[in-house]
Image 1 (cartoon, rainbow, N blue to C red):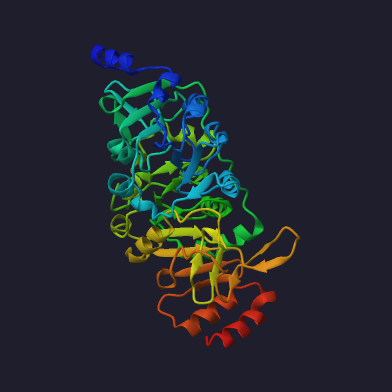
Image 2: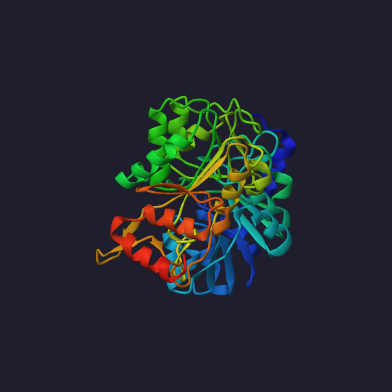
Length: 438
């Protein structure tokens, strides 16, 4: 890679230590601070050292995969687009708050509704044209950079360089400070091992997938279960347009199942907006012309996905009621995760010619005492958030079957949903449905 002298001089002028870069932070600042697998940890250490002289620092991001040093200070709070385990813990201490989102709209929030004083994100080393590639998370970073007063790039030489659609990189002209990172590992997200329940649910979805279909998969054991079944199947010429890129897609590509040859948009390309997985995934991503990274307002946009024929959307849920309302983000009033792109993909897949959308969940769960509870309930738990409204839901799948709710009356919906509940809860659900007039 040959970089011209003008760019090298510009790089040298903007390259500073982490301590020098974070000197720009002022009390009360809103800092866009990474997302999922690419937290700027060198900048975090430097910012933490400054916290004794700062007040009301607000870090904004999503899915913390490591506790931040800065958050050890009482002066810093985390505002999250999407909760993970660490966010749930911090929320109990009043150190983290959820930002309810429609994920496809986050770039618009940043451009039109939110204040961003400083952006701190990781990126690859600068290329010969002066661009820093965002590596594993593209999502909303370019929108944040456009509106921020100060932009700090933490260079991580281990990040994969990914081909883009657009908004997948930032030019040095738009960067104020460059910090060469010292904590350069990429966070790995171990692949969830599919359970017997996952495999059973996946077996109900498999017959609904046709050759040439375009896949969108959520996170967890079910996508891995489905990936295993597809890899062993006779399906061929599949394509991918998915919010998250995970190990399951690598397995499918290596099995020769993904060609994208019949995809109407981004023909032949695996389209995504962020990635999290193993080193195998990150190696697959690097300089791979099969990939196309886009911002989330393209990837999750209903007007985009609805134009892709045979679009198959598969997402999980925490709870569903007898009318078909889906909660995928809270356990009662306690925020558990986030809405993500579920509603966008549910609507886009249904509008797609030949498309289908699936909400998948185990019929039951056990609490800490080992007591079995149904995830299918007469009404949602008090305080539960409706992630996908009942009128948008198409297929609902548990380990006991798959039902299509589109166009059904409330009576018919209740009957079908009860039929895929755990047998131990069906009688009580029928009684409840009767009392509710269903």
